[in-house]
Amino acid sequence: MFYISEVKNTPPATFKTTLQEMVYRLLQEQNVPFERVDNDEAITMEDCIIINRQLNMKTVKTLFLCNRQQTAFYLFVTTADKPFITKDFSRVMDIPRVSFAPAELLDKMLGTTIGATTIFGVLLDKDNQVQVVIDKDVLSEEDYGCSDGTTTSYIKVSRDWIMGDFLAYAGHVPKMIEI
Image (tube, rainbow, N blue to C red; front, side, top):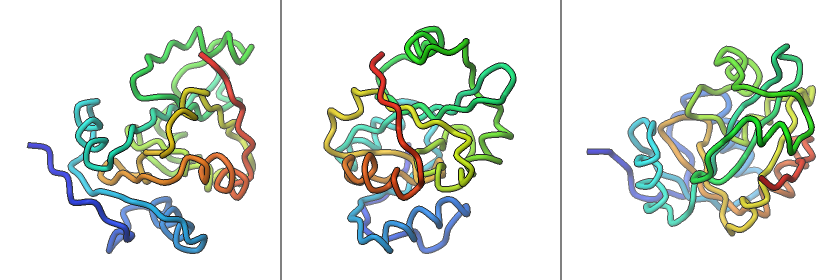
């Protein structure tokens, strides 16, 4: 049985990662309303469906990608139900084929692990090495649901806050695409 907590409006009592702590400190500093749940490690789409029901939202899919030379990096946010096809992403972005960035770079650049990739990782990308790319379908939801930088806690915030205030605060201008 997959454990999921009741919905909470407060940060975790203890933080598991530096990124997770940064997320909740920023939300509190900017008085951003949020809801969150603690859960068993979320690994499958079935796990995310349970989380979605509890938070009354649709979790986004966030992928960390790079070129073959590992010199260009992309944080791609799309809807959870949309299959990711590298060829389509590369065509729309007009770039050579991309692949998933290595786990070591995900941790080093965005402060998280595979399965916990989140838009909040750009808080650690002070040199703007990562291009944020948003699938326009993400904009159809009022809320933005994602990991808080861990696989054991998910958060719901305003999509408008993420797309506007948060990305501006983090110094990242998203590229909007349609796949």
